[in-house]
Structure formats: structure tokens, C-alpha cells
Image (cartoon, rainbow over all chains, first blue to last red; front, side, top):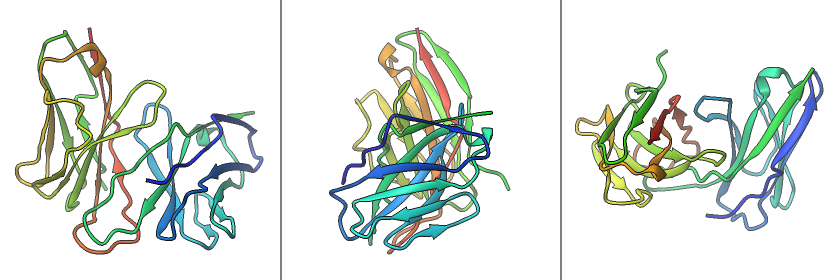
Length: 113
Length: 118
């Protein structure tokens, strides 16, 4: 699987936007970029995914570089409930069985008042 | 609706004991995954089921680890003769995905079972 690189930790003030970067320079043409997050003492949860175009949903936005070698997860207004570890994961489009998730160490986001 | 549930939430075992961890996936979900998460690390894949068939067990760390899903719904992860290095959070996830091309296979995770081996 292609590898992703994320900063170990980031801090943000509440109500401010947060940009979480992810580098994936060896991404292949059929790899989708997925983001999951893990709140304290919980299992990971899906946030967003994309292939080439920027994506928005109720939780976040995903900005994908034109060369697809990096992407940024954007939380428009961070709240205390967004404090979590955020994982950037590449997933290949499969025509067979479901694919496992390959997590790195992620970025631990701290949100302060 | 009901999400993925796991039991027990916490388990303390003495070294050498056998343990069984249960996962109840979301009803109708074809795929089921087990992951192991050591302290301060991201989850690591252990094994994968499609219905009752175990299609990938490449992540199981040793033959002391065994997983089953006999009726294609509930799954059990069993660890025999537990060792201290088995201490971790064991996460179960399920997804709708079955055979065929898929673009998105969102995995829904349970809260995990925290295993401590003394």
C-alpha cells in the first residue's frame, strides 16, 4: 500500500478553521484518499473521502492537490468535540474483496478554548 | 440505528489464560474486520471475513490468535495462552461491501475491547 505522512500533532483554538495536511507522494491513479478520526476511547469513524476533486460533507472538506501527492482535511470551525486523532488512508479501488484499512500514526488534534 | 457492539469492553487476563472477544456487526453487513491497536499507535489489521468465510488472516500475529464468524453475523476473536504483548485494544469493524467493484466501503467501528494481560 502507498504510504501517507502526517504531522504527529496540531493545535487549534475553538471556533477557528483547522487544516490537517497529508502527504502521499507514491499514490497510484486508482487510490482513493480517505480520512477517519478516532475520538478518545472510541473506535475510528469515517470522515470523508475523495479521488481527484475537492469534496465537502457535513463534517469537513477535503482539498486534493492537482498532482494528488498531498491532501488537506479542513474542519471549518473546530470545536472541543473535534479533538481526536485524524488518520489519512489510501484505499485502492478493488474489484474483488473488501479492502482493509492501513492506518499510520495519524495527527493528534488538540482544540483549546 | 444500532452500531457495531463489542463485549466485553474491558478484560483483564492472567498470562496464559484464554480469552474470547465478541463482535456484533451492523445487521446486514457482509464484511467484518478485526484490528489490534497498541497504546499510542494506529489500529493494525488482523483478519477479514466476508459473510462466514475468512478471506484474509494475514495480520494475525501468531497461531494463538483465532477468529470465527460461523453464521456470517457475530464474530469471536479468541486468543489462547495470552501473553503480555497481547495487551491492546481490539477493534471490530463492519461494512456493507460484498463482492464486486466498490468505490466507497465505509467501515463502521465498534468501541473496542481493552485487553490487559498481567
